[in-house]
Image (cartoon, rainbow, N blue to C red; front, side, top):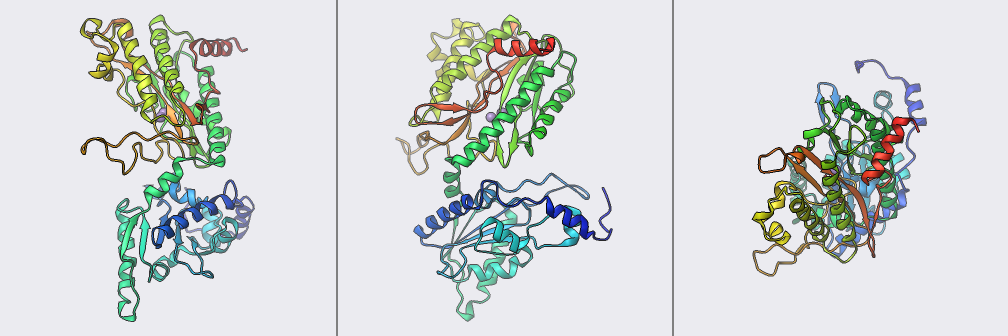
Length: 482
Ligand code: GLY
Ligand code: MN
Ligand code: MN
């Protein structure tokens, strides 16, 4: 790294400005309409001011930060990716007052020479369609002014000690003016449930971005299958994934890539490590990119040699059938649990058929399910919401709907068109004396991303083969140089 005491270079700053982004991905109107929805909802709740900060920069060590990633809620409402920014939505603004106000970093030729282009308040207001924009450094003087005489605050309540403390300081500053007749907000509400419900149903722009993230991620898995040879390290295969993400314009992986050879596949969150993929091993890859703020999430499991052994193939086909059952159960109108139940039934039957679960101990697949005997080999759920965050926001159960009994959980959420989720069953068989040896150390997961539709679901990650025969054919073709 260079030392930051060197003097400014105006020409470098203007070059950076020439490459600068022109505005939000998808156009300012998209984000303005989302802000209007929030404002309308706040007005319906009696008004108040919403405060939505972006994420802080995080120091990695000494002068080096972790790669910066904006806050997803903030991005959803602004499309703005610079650090040190905060959105204010004032539901009590009068006709000629701004209701949508951005705080962002001021223009600064010297800092831009080192760190790159900043929109600055004027540029951001124009390019992103805010009613007003102010310098981030003025927050402590401006926010007390903006929240004075407003009935309530709406923000991510108790999500960040740092932000809670900042809000308290702003409220204190308003209270300090009480003798002048100014009143501080009398209530604070959690803004997050409203934003989560909005984020849960993706709009056309989001779905388009997610399809593209899925396509790029699928290409990365294809490349990993094509380049994999026995003797490669897990990290070499990871390198093929990361290369493909960036090569196709994705900004980063959406989460830490899992590349697990052999028995490592039975460790659910195993990161890509130093192990060598041996002939006869399966390799489980759970990796995908983030594109323009949206995640994909794909898992494929394939043989390092290019050919499944018969035991691997048996389990692979059970997991694939379980995934198909879950896919068939995914459509608008069913509950979130339906795909999981469908997958579990197929997996439980497969565990009985293979003798991994002792048939003499269970009268039927229903007993395996009732006693959760499958959970030793399938210990996670079949899916999760997917969106800007890989484990995206949104309740999995109906909020505010009590169960039949007072202490029962509320019912599972009903799927609706435009929701996006993963479908990712697996089987993880560790070596154990009560399990047939041929299945020892086999870990398999198959994960695709789905958009819920009225009649079913659209799989957006099938650019990479999923059937065992197709995976083998792809790998054989690559070895022949086809
Ligand atoms: N990659 C994280 C997950 O599959 O949930
Ligand atoms: Mn997942
Ligand atoms: Mn995954």
